[in-house]
Amino acid sequence: MPIRTFTPSRRTLLGASAAAVAAAVTGVAPVGAAERPSAHSDARLRRLIASMTLEEKVGQLFVMRVYGHSATAPDQADVDANLKETGVRNAAELISKYHVGGIIYFAWAHNTRDPHQIADLSNGIQKAGLAEHHRIPLLISTDQEHGIVARVGKPATLMPGAMALGAGAFRRGTRDAREAARIAGRELLALGIRQNYAPVADVNVDPANPVIGVRSFGSVPESVAALVAAQVKGYQGAGIATAAKHFPGHGDTKDDSHDQLPHIDHTRQEWEALDAPPFRAAIAAGIDSIMTAHIVVPSLDPAEDPATLSHPILTGVLREQLGYGGVVVTDSLGMQGVRTKYGDDRVPVLALKAGCDQLLNPPNLAVAWNAVLAAVKGGELTEARLDESLLRILRLKARRGLFDRPYVTHRGVDRTVGIRSHLAAADRIADATTTLLVNEGGLLPLSRRRHRRVLVVGVDPASPSGTTGPPTSVLAASLTQLGFTAMALSTGSAPSRAKIDEAVAAARAGADAVLIATRNVSATSAQRTLVAELVAVGVPVIALAVQNPYDVAHLTGLGVRAHLAAYSWTDVEMRAAARVLTGKVRPSGRLPVPVQRADDPLKVLFPVGRGLCF
Image (cartoon, rainbow, N blue to C red; front, side):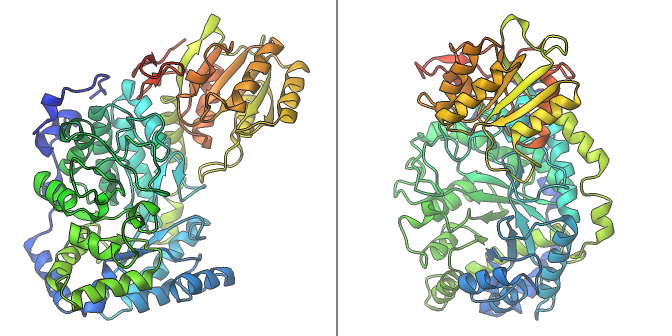
């Protein structure tokens, strides 16, 4: 079903059931009921819970980070980091001491060096968990959103991110989003990772949003809902638990919850119309888990507690109003947004009282673990309340086959991760995402006769896991492979006078065209100065936004001949952009968000659905 380009009426969405919304936006009946555990499996899980000690029950609620490439023999620097943060040497000791129910992988924690290492780490973690008295497998998770957020890098297949998929969906419907999730899910499964904190279900209403942006599928609630449901089906069809995030919706804020506590001022009616549809669709699609947001939404909770700690939001809205019965996982408890109002000892207790099940990545595990234990012993929390969360978590583990198939193999990795068909699919999906916004005088596609020598300048942001090099280098290499002579010159996101002069001199030295990669341009950005001075050289200038597509608003009027949006600077999207620039592929992406004018943000420069072809 193609993605529609209009915003649905609030009357249509208000009061609609989760099943009705999902059926409307996906054309597929909900599958959640088919994945409910049988009475027999529930009985077995209840007996398991009844046999656990209180300490084991508390531990099963936590999902924790751990440093190192190995469960038992990490590098000494990682041993030191573990001792400093958790008082244990490695993952096996973490499991033995705290009985944690899950571990989250990060690249910066050295968990994801290469596919065989990841598989061995996963197996070591499962061996440690199954060696415990109750032989409970761990739920290993990560944030593999793709695009600008990816913890597992090459040679795994890296797909276009959410907003890029939203751009491609105008012509291709939801099938690419579902296929991308299915492929990514298969590869995560082969690595022993069974829960992915994706898809992002936030509707990116505010262009200045510093934390969501291109991690969102777009600004139209119905379209976001359709793509969220498609990815839920893709991931979970591959055997991976998903986590729609960040409930109740983090798309309309200028604040980053990593650093502060954002406020969302939507009325209840606005929340129903703008933020709720993707979560309703995810629930109807049978989603395994939903991640909370560290945001304040006064219309949903007048007490103005962070949603992660809000009983009215998590129990009243999510559980009771939306009818969600699956696992609720907190966003990282180390983020400042959830720590602003309460101390680290109160946060995990209040999260459980609000309705959370999994407590993700507290800054101090000993403090959090002991606080929950003390709350039960002191009567603030009941053991029965813990049992409710445990049953939901164990159901998820059973549904995803962890009790039956906890281990993975190198052979499975080699047959699945980064295989040729997956890489080809990633390129095919990316080809549909690049969006052409301006093409004055029919400059594009570039001609090898008139534009053979291309100077590629611009930003080279810190490389996400999906890159082999800076985007300027990847673009130049891709253009060269397509028959052009391209040279890369990194000028950065805040080019100095010396860098601007160097780029201008390079353009004058014989470039037939200049391609500038921009990222998050503002009215006072030195990137604007660079663009203006390159235009003044007299050669055609092309601007490619490699993150948010709003850059064009701040570059309009400077004389740039062509503007494109790629939505990320990962290799797969840079290669696709090069194919569009040279006419190897026709541009077919469409804006999934509106671009407002820089001089008057109340007016739209380019509407949702904008996208040129040639």
